[in-house]
Image (cartoon, rainbow, N blue to C red; front, side, top):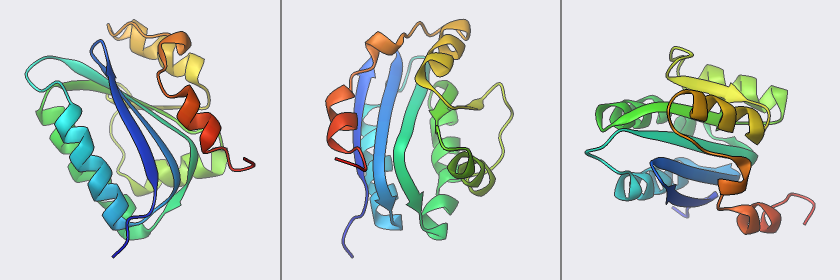
Length: 144
């Protein structure tokens, strides 16, 4: 089956930055996860920052894969994960469908600046200026 969804993943210091766009099917989610596993700095503490500003939802099976993906991350050095989802309805769906983890491990934000401040407070300095996927965000804007 064809992969649906787009993503870009970069390591900035000890923050693994993942940006997603479009509608994901299960194959797209699993392919993105494989790329995440390849780029994660396993063996050292790291944080995750996911920008899902242009995420347009996922199939139920795709969302159900998230708990095992997060379990892998936390077993391989991830200390915390900040998820940016500006749209309140999509944020609520993402939270409910991907497993509820404690706020100190996974926290949702409506904007990048709040997520960066939280990561910095958790010991992973990161600013909006450090965000490496501005071109991807521009290219995948729904009105683009």
